Image (cartoon, rainbow, N blue to C red; front, top):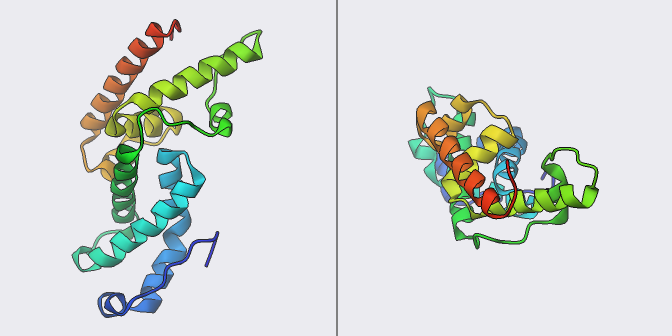
Length: 183
């Protein structure tokens, strides 16, 4: 068990993927999967739960894994689907933890309260985006992940990632302008 996360192997998993092999995969990739999910959901508790869920999906899908390919991109793609499903199930305007507001950079202004208010409006606007646009925008713009990596995780082309980011930014711009913020 690392970082409070653990997976208990069931007999079916031992038959499909040896318990030792699965445990080794979990230990090797758990942090990367957790980090990837955390970038999308922005909630450490949910990211822990979704990491476990991702490994259960991996466990159940092991027979479909092509061993000639790398494991990490396959795991990241499953993690992305799990995170997207979770995001879609959340209310569009859920309340973000206060530390989330400080994680988003804002232009320096003379008034810290104004900057905090702008950050809150940006976060709320992001939360109102459809999940697939929000994930693409956060990973590309906020996290600065390479488009190729995002495309692989989302199971789309790099051009589709560019289009999703462009659409997300266009929607964000309109939403922020309606709120009196000129991006």
